[in-house]
Length: 293
Image 1 (tube, helix red, strand yellow):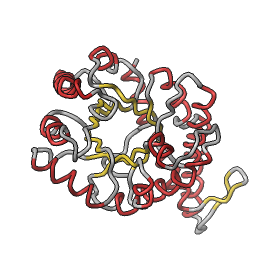
Image 2: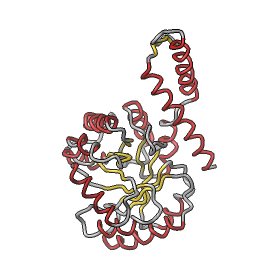
Image 3: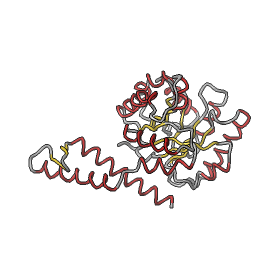
């Protein structure tokens, strides 16, 4: 666990062009809100969206939610101005889209630092085949990368694949990015489900992503929050098992044994590390949810 470790069960995109949504995001049970200046925003609304986001972040009111701003593509006509506007306000991270290489990460950081944001961590979006293939070099580019965010809709389009309930077309890609993120200690969050009325598929995607190793899921609609939060919240029985694992192996070690059996399962040191992480995550989630009440 590093200094940026925190719950990211749900990361809700909030369009910067809509002040009603920016206001409402202050009350929603999202672990993170991504205030969005990027592709979904109409060209004629880009500058107003930037002004809105700066104003709402400056005013505050988001409580313990992680506040992230997604800027426009670095090579677009808005990217540099977005970075300059966001660098000196109280955001928790800047999300950069279309990151496909180590060089892209270093360019993003250089632009952010030049704008006065050298203190800020960043997140990177993985949304193309080349980004997936380069996910190892992207993840290793800087310790200021706190999270890798999948853009699965973009990836499916570029793969010429089809959206299916089982997500077969992108399972390999998801696994590759998870491997890269874990190898370098980054958080990693699953992409959106754009069919926000199909809760059956959404819940399946949440639980599949959790079992694959994701930290959470990005969302496009508040109706999805409860499902994502539930899927990525450690259950009471899991927390209880984690505490038992830690205590049992400690006792075994003190008795001169390197392993122990708990609930018919062999327990070793790596299980204790995972158990400690799960307990810490559970405690942080409990604190977050008290703040949201």
